[in-house]
Amino acid sequence: MSRYNAPFEIHVHGDVPLRADVTYAQLQDALKPLWTYAGARSLADGAESAYEEEPGIKFDAPEHVLRMCWTVPGDEDFRQSLDEMCMSLNELSQEGAAIEVTFYDAEFDEEEEPPEAEARDDFLMLFVGPTPAAIMQVQRDLLVEDVVNLMERHFDGAELGGVVAEIDKLFSQRFDALVNSLEIGKPPRGGGSGHAGGRRPRRLH
Image (tube, rainbow, N blue to C red; front, side):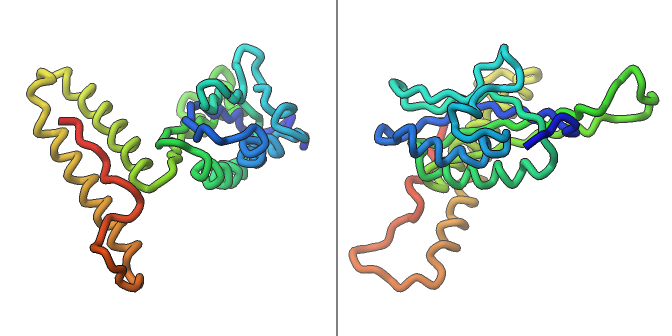
């Protein structure tokens, strides 16, 4: 698939912890939307980034981690490949993880464009995980980190416990709403009730 005139350079970055039993063949199948988009015939063929200084797509077998620092030329249709990849990685992941995707406008030249022109750069944060709770945990941790970093410019970290507690409350409400939506229409089961989708995200305090 030739993309010499692709409007974007798309960078995919993130580490995904994998289950200990995941094989290279399973990972190759899960990442097929990426390497086929790059015009490759296998993961080994497509794992190399468009930039030599980037490590590309690596399977760290001893650590059971998928490591991605990979750039490919492409268009908006790459988003479909990302959706398919995330669905597959959910089934192989050991815990929740974030994947950053940046679309750089390859056609934008600051020196030639008028002052009011803006690049069509875009940024996505994708999440994968074995359960909805694992995915929410990563989302919650990133939000707490961002909020605390922002507010520590004005407040001491010890003063922010109430803010973190409110964030936890919001995620708890979202988790409970998800559980309730999953349980609608299910026949009642014996032996008591429990939350679907794994444990409630842990609290910081």
